[in-house]
Image (cartoon, rainbow, N blue to C red; front, top):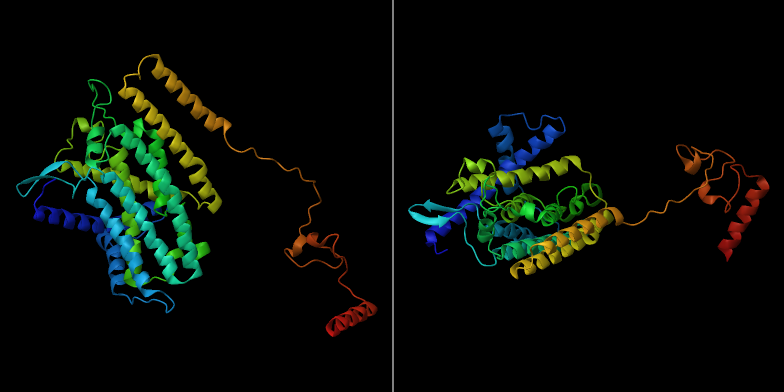
Length: 439
């Protein structure tokens, strides 16, 4: 795109204002949606513009003017760079996000996209990868054990799920034949069937369903949201890498979290849900050209954000071993196998071999492989057979200390005695203690 500099400036300012206002709306939206799911009223003390959207705006202004305190043991340079790095990555990913098609902006024909490159999708992946340095620096510079453990968890989590997320990108690249975000959206606008009798388009969530499922799981883990919020779990690490942050620097991390939630949802919309293309069957009546495309883009992203809120309100937090096993034992192997299948099918299709009996044979092999993974995979659980013993409610000192003459299970066969001690025994114990002291 060869836009004048003032058009680019308008787009940049528009994207920043959009993300800030969208974050305010999402804070209110999350509170209200979780309240509805849990049969609560949510923020109702004031009207929507005061108690709802105005409350989030007031929280942001309060954090901006609040005392920006930092403990004396922190590395102040890195302590300040960490939130800035997270914020820049959160905003930078939107520079290549296609919000709509071609529009007329002050007499200039341009696209609702700040810029586009042949490798725009790789820039999205790079921004999400670099953002982890902000969390690592936050934990390291805080010089606090809770913050350091939170940053280590965050780095392990992002590395694990970044791999599966990148592999889900690869399947889209192979199928679309391009890494440009705008061209990927246009490729999804092609008809699903020859002649397109009912207006269906080949959105990749259907054609590349395994990649879409892997990406959705990975994007939740990438953003540290429940049930993957292990780096910030208050029950274990106070607040993770954010423990020592206050004021404006804490507000940047808070803002980056909500923007990242919208960013990964926008990437899913662009790569798998047709971007700014209209939703079928509404596409038969309502266009997606011009500024209408931004409406469809906004609706799709907001539906995915609703998925984030839904997961937070329904699922408990994973254990760390479950969390890492899901990424390394399931998502990454499934993604690798799926990429190999897509590569094989695209190669055969380009040479004209993917037709007739060979097509049905490949589909049958894929179906059988999926059935084998679902029903034959997994580890066999060995059930230990324990001898049934009489239940003792007072064993172990619970709910009261052991009764006189009772032996605790952990000391059975090791220590025996009673609660009463004779005078001779006390004297023997005293002499033994004195002899040990003399030695």
